[in-house]
Amino acid sequence: MDTNRLLERLAAEDVDAPFERAPARLKSRIYSALVNRLAETGQLQSLPATKASGGQLCVFEHTLAIVPCSDAVTSKNPCRVCHARVLGERLEWAPIFWPACPYSKFHNG
Image (cartoon, rainbow, N blue to C red):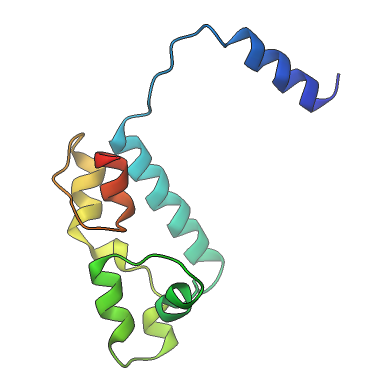
């Protein structure tokens, strides 16, 4: 049986199962782990380049993007030092309200 048919069969069997959202803390931890893994494999796209390509930046990333500094600095993951990450990973209903913050989207979205 090919993978597509197997997945379609599993999805059809699960149609009546109640949908349960993943906890915001789990989403936050997974997001942090994925970004950390990306940073391990190479330099991240710089914040100005992310913004120029249509990506959204949180208020802290936006500030860092407009400060004149090297790509090595703006290619770092500012979420690693942001208190929103700490709150997002530890509280289920974290009080994070910044636009374009992924942790805010997990908790308020």
